[in-house]
Length: 264
Image (cartoon, rainbow, N blue to C red; front, top):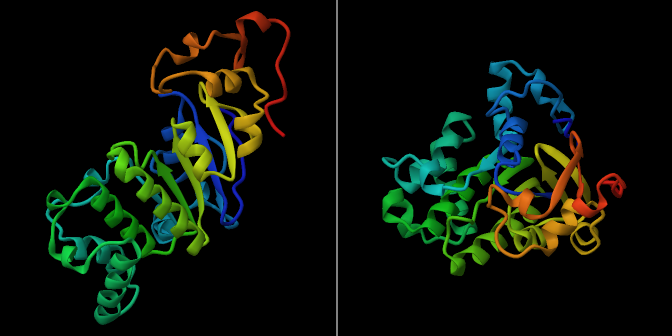
């Protein structure tokens, strides 16, 4: 609802908020996996919302999404080599020999052994499947990616490895990224800037250190200081927030006194 922000080339904007606040809907709308009701999405000077279906298909390689469930993102009947080569074949990005060579380069870049190329998703771990997804996305060399909780379904021991991989590959390929998470620690580690979402609105946005260490909006202050997970559907009420007017949330004790500016 009236969401507006800009992500610079090579920058990662972290989007944080409680479950159900609209983070995933926003990410999917940006990529037109869900059609937005209004507004514009501009990627590298192209208004994505104005593209025809045909032109959108041509533009798709430039913007990709990493989903939470890597296994569900892959065709269970396809071998790893086929999953990675599929987008290259669809967009005719080289000869068969070129594509085979590129697949082997990609599998190495994401830290997997070539022996896994003949395996299918059910024969891999969650972390390995997420690496395959990353290789598949990198095959297209996108300019912009939306990463929607890509490590939340993984074991804690694997999460840091995948986060480091996403961050390193993002820098290597100079990709812009919208990183969606309810985990403030992950957001801090991955983001140059942070946007805080509440009930479908961005209530605060700024440099990661400013937003997380010196939050202005009362919701952000409670969010940063709250124990436990942000996945609770009643989290807003538990934080003691009051909607003074539509989209304007303040602490119960500060109701009627206004709030700090959300942007800086």
